[in-house]
Image 1 (cartoon, helix red, strand yellow):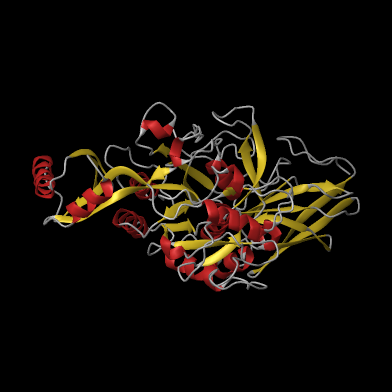
Image 2: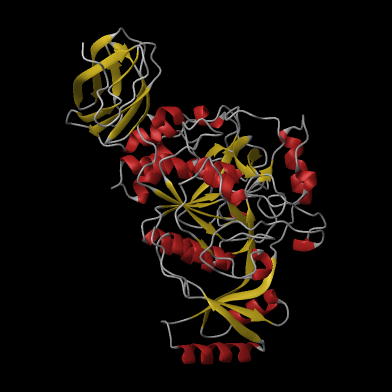
Length: 543
């Protein structure tokens, strides 16, 4: 939130080849600020029901006069609070205003940052997916029909996530930090978050992180397209919400973004046409949970959304890192390839569970300032920012197969299906998330056999390897046998199943799909040539 807790703007925090996690954590802790960073504004809320503009202005002026403060209203927030400009020390003014009658709360506005640290480039493998059994979960669900809101630095074009973004919004209210020439607008494109030396209270210049693109890619990058990385929930859609720019973002902007993500109204902002059940917050900073943060989370939760938050990377107690310490969120710590807790991760009683957060490969851009449309690439990062979208994506897989589940039921299944740490799990929550067990815990138990309405193509080459799509009902979790040979199921949902055909003898055979509800048998063909289904043209010559 207010603390530059992640070190992503500190070149000395980058691990060198051969660095140990302890050394990385120590360097990071040495340069991490120990106190919140404030914007110079105050967030306050008056007591009582909403009032007219004139009455509100009068009450605000009276409170300021009694407190001896000079203030100017900047904007209203979705939670009913106001952001005001003040003259003098915002912390002192907030403290004085909070003590006045008629003021429910007054707190200095704080700054959020991403919860991620750039990693060195020598870890090329996407180890995290098999480690938490994502491939097994894909046989049941790909996240189709779900929407995930990513409140972060915004979206960027990338061929490996093409077509997965829905319309979003830019909630950065201060053009100084948005780097797009204006304040809030309907364009959530990431304009960069670079800074020169001396900006953001940091003597070290920083490059644009494209953090939001990496987070979104972990969730919804295209899978099976022969390009780059695999997203955990490739069937899901992303609502990109820009709330972090240069120097991070403010708690009031993030609070409005959270409410809007869930479909709630925000003053001066068009309604969100695609409310999300899952809200990913890979951000945070030093401080307790402020009233405006808690109100936003409560409002999103009341609308049926699950808010999933990064624990932070200070190697300290999460009780001092917000919004990870707010009520009603799922707080995610980072685990390693060795199934231990990551040394840099925050820990404590407020952590819900852990997910992979080291050497996580995802989408990026080569530009150091403004995005280069031709500069799309892949980068490896580490941090609780990277761990959090693993959990958000798994929640997407779960809701896809069980859309009637409540947030409480999804949370319960996530928590009850974890796997244990090998060692060092104290303070890292109940365990490491397990995609397959979580999805299996919520999927409906089938009582009726599957049906098949179409098979495309209706056969394969005798050498096998062709990808076949089956449409019908009750196909989720189905196993496939062709001519008595087991086939590799690539994905399945209630209405669709894809598999890779095994080798087989020339001619007609049968395909059997078996689910917990029963089995269905249909015809299948093998030929020596590639089989392409074209309207009006037989798949096979008459024999």
